[in-house]
Image 1 (spheres, rainbow, N blue to C red):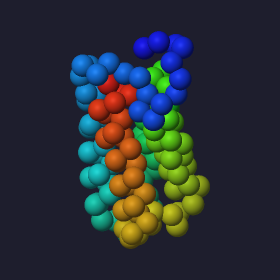
Image 2 (image 1 turned 30 degrees about the vertical axis):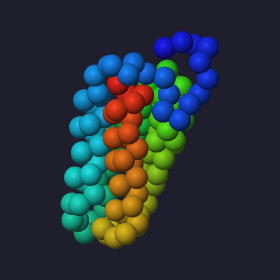
Image 3 (image 1 turned 90 degrees about the vertical axis):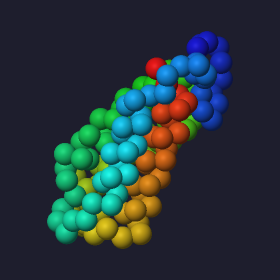
Length: 117
């Protein structure tokens, strides 16, 4: 990866590199959370995991100059809200599924591009 390369949608990465196990497992984890039914406050531990993963994704996105990676990290900041309010993500509805689905797809794209090992 050259430092002089500009920012691109998927960033610069080794095309022959291994796909990111972290990205694949994390995308599946978010997808599983999407379809868990619950009628209580959103799990704070899940929020912390998502926010910690956002830091890692941001680090990898900056290193590979990936716009999608930075967008995925910024999008993950939505999970700060359940820490401070109990009403967001309380019920599994269209918004809940959409928000989780977008994050899962963003991470899955990253697993095959800028998150490659």
